[in-house]
Length: 549
Image (cartoon, rainbow, N blue to C red):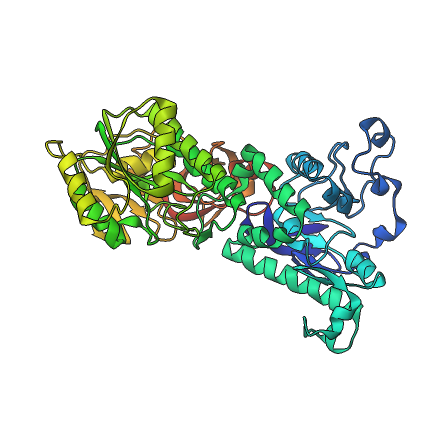
């Protein structure tokens, strides 16, 4: 009997404990002498040696052995793994040679395998590849790949490979290097890199580590780009919010799932305030923008007479109402004043789609540089005419006076930040009349009369509805449970169904025959249905329901 107790998720990557009945629990991700854990590996079953590219007509003649761990899986094999198993993908090291196949095979395998299985990639992990392997959902590794490198006289690091004489150059001060033992150095380097991966998964920043590591290997860059192109697959597994900084330091950051999700929800869900005047403003290094001195001056000049839209990379467009929601308040990007052609095309596309859906009588561009360029590209693409209040130094007195004058005579826009946030987060266009913002940023909440309806999560900026707040949201984000009263967190076996739009970290309401609960989803809805263990919802508050006799 095996069990995989997942502790922390970061997209496809996980940390946790893998247990067998008679072996010491294993911390994952990790590197081990796997034949000591799984004696059956020494038997080398035929099915375990099939190439990943083998056609179905061949694979079907060599089914995996039953009842053994780890369970062999293959893109052309029907899945035989169960919840808690360790699954093994042999020959995965060969997938690096074809990044497109790497991603296609990965998606096929992930979609037909229980979500709470541990994934083993034999003879694959190197210090240079451990991060991308964990990012793509592998948990367990052995030392075979680094031992082969040692036999070849290759000195392995997370930044590249060198000849054996690098042992003498002080690059590393591990015990292996001190003893001039190449094999021990390479094993140590692998363990060290996996330990760093575990740390970044806990911080929710594995993507940033992968973007930095893949710069030394063209195939890894290609894998990351192909994986980002599988947006529906990747979006499902990415959390809706993270507590730390989202560092957008490379071109690949433009396509990461969180960035694309923000733009998609902006276009498909977000409902802007009722006004026909919009002002396009530049972003600021300080987040949220409203706390920066520059944006305070912008807001004074606008005076509430227009809808404020911030043009920024990599997110594209951030309405003022959404500036505190992840990732708008959490991203950090290198500031050079120059946006390359790909960056401009992506951001201009977001603006174009937004203005095609949301019509304004006037759109005022208070921008400079790359932001002004993409605004012009979008205006040309969707056939609107921009008004300009500056073309440089938007925070200067001359530009601010011009912005103030351009808005003379316009009516003030009703400030209803709550309405915009609800529409973006829950996809609901609800009436928020009578709601009042109380408290001091960031500890703020919304109420109606003396009844609190929403608070704001200070780490992600997302709304947290009370039971009265959920009553305003007619549908969606419901997790249905069996006929029981939760005594704490809701576990996966108690879930009967969950709305398909739920993602890790979403605020949800738990609905049962005898109780309701509010809390935060610990899993995307799809994994709630494909898992047998673990927490489904981290419950914040429970309400018993009256039952009829």
